[in-house]
Image (cartoon, rainbow, N blue to C red; front, side):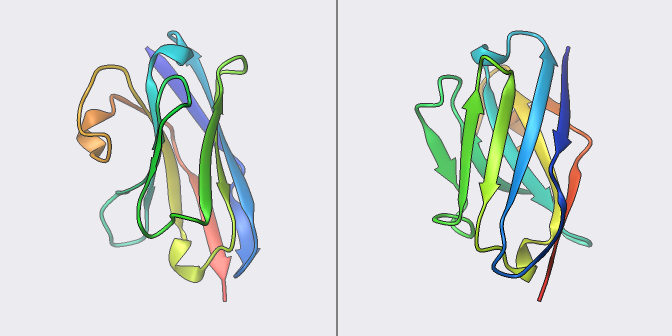
Length: 124
């Protein structure tokens, strides 16, 4: 089992920044891919960013590319999402997820474990 706990969400004005954290426990954190997803009210959960087990490979949704940065610290069993230049359309519940097996890295179905989510609200 893998337990994931997100933190760092909150209310921020447009143009501001937030840093989300996701602490993992359970299995060997450094052996699996991590991802961030988000879900706005009335919308499906969507891919935001993903990072390989080593941190050497990252991939972003076009909507956040150049504004968000995913990183990980395997010594701390934590993955981060630095969000800069936030816009109202970034408002959503943000979830971190762990892919223990393999699959399409932007697909929610490929990730076996999920956190409870943290709310990010961007005011205009």
